[in-house]
Figure 1 (cartoon, rainbow, N blue to C red):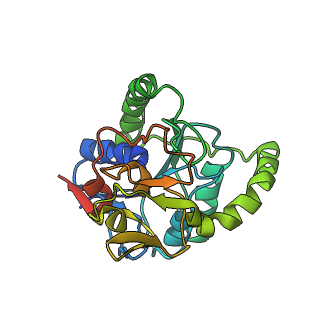
Figure 2 (figure 1 turned 135 degrees about the vertical axis):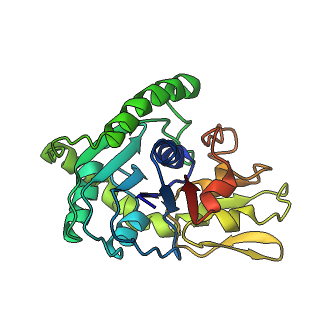
Length: 261
């Protein structure tokens, strides 16, 4: 093993990005950030990467907590890729700050444009097909940069953008209990996929139906990967596109570790 990439992904965009980077490097594993997935970083790595989405103008809280509990060792090249379909605000800086507390410094950062897929709030945008094509082209450059140990200046924190987060703070505080809005339709076949997918172990099956523990991060995996579209958020997602990355299967997000030789 020469490289490790830590990834959090709800609808597959970040996992796809991490997997393509990993596949281009020699001897790389992708670690899915999940509630009970502990990983000990080995010595003598060449690269350590983090591929995370923008959640409510920051990085997901579960990713912050996970990184805070990592024992980061000396590595010559840390990189961070933030996948985003809208406004990243200061998400890159958030990742930098968490890593600095762990004694690590990012050599390379990039905001990677992708489909914005928070289906509980809006229809996925921009245009899915066009965005995926542009995203693949952009990703090729990112891969070349990481392969070549490219370095860039840390992104400057925007005070103006930081004020935007004041709007989000009440919403973010309320996130864990927003799973009260999930509705399980009669089309549920009790397959249990949602329980396996949930990165916070927030879903459990009771009498064959998914129930929620009120520790939700609103990743929307349970909604977009349900094979029968049986989980919705209130009545908002019923007629919306249940987008997940077309090249990422549910079992890839469930896996603890994926190896790329």
